[in-house]
Image (cartoon, rainbow, N blue to C red):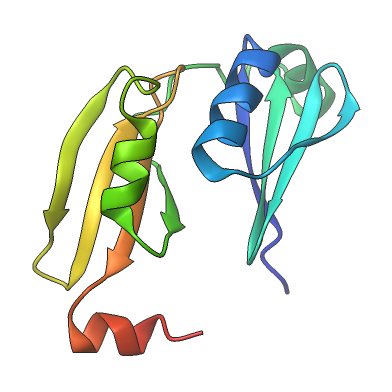
Amino acid sequence: MKFVSIRVITSDVARLVEFYERATGVRATWATEEFAELNIAGATLAIAGASTVPLFAPGSARPADNHSVITEFLVDDVDRVHQDLTGFVTDFVTEPTTMPWGNRSLLVRDPDGNLVNFFTPVTPAAIEKFAR
């Protein structure tokens, strides 16, 4: 088995793709007006319109209704990411903070309210864990 992607369902694909392109610096590949993917080292973030949900199972997913998943991005400098996103991101949940497990994290909400964590390992144990 191979983990391939996370798919986010939204009512506004273009708006969410624009957010993630700007936040990650990665350009999306569009398959249709209702489906795009950002291929980021390690995984793919897929963004699909609500109209695609019935293709799987009607009512199985709802846009802007996530209250349990945090999408996370390992970055070289979380403080720089914070600076880059200031003025663009409208909902900073936490400013860059060093967590007890050794990552310096920045938690924001995307335009649909989904939690997004940008983090940089800063302790020796965390750096070793994420060594590339």
